[in-house]
Amino acid sequence: MVKKLTFAGGVHPNDNKAQTASKPIVEIAPPKELVFPMVQHIGAPCKPVVAVGDTVCMGQKIADNEAFISAPIFSSVSGIVKAIEKRPVPNGAEVESIIIENDYNDTPDETIKPIDIAKTLPEDIPGIVREAGIVGMGGAAFPTHVKLMPPKETKIDTVIV
Image 1 (cartoon, rainbow, N blue to C red):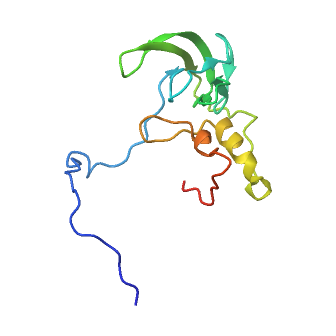
Image 2 (cartoon, rainbow, N blue to C red; image 1 turned 90 degrees about the vertical axis):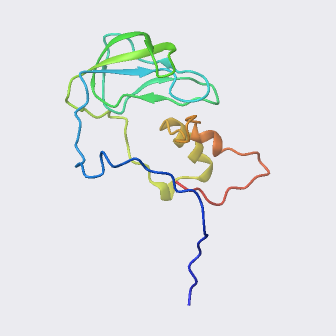
Image 3 (spheres, rainbow, N blue to C red; image 1 turned 45 degrees about the horizontal axis):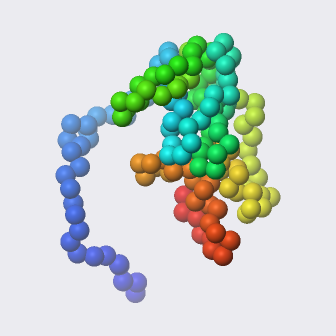
């Protein structure tokens, strides 16, 4: 017989979901204009790799920085780059941002290709993760590829995603 592992006590804060718990999930259409700040992760800010007037596709890289602790930024819609200018972010700062006018076509970027993980070498994974722009969700948005590159004497045998 397998004994269920559990512990007594713990913190059980109020989840404050009373106002929305009975509401249905609704899909919200993306807006006509999207703002992509160049600071979306901890580390070096990105620099635009597109210019005003460029047509961009959904999933296209629009900003990057070669710094080790940085991650590229991709467009979530297809459309036209209308401006590159400073815009406010939640902390009140104004940062360089790419403004894209959504064309609502969701044209996918042709560079998006599936990866055959069975044929991928372990040492290639950090580069793939970096080029995908994957960052942590713990609040600092720390670039994940850095976490996959420990000192040489450290071995990673399990990655939890």
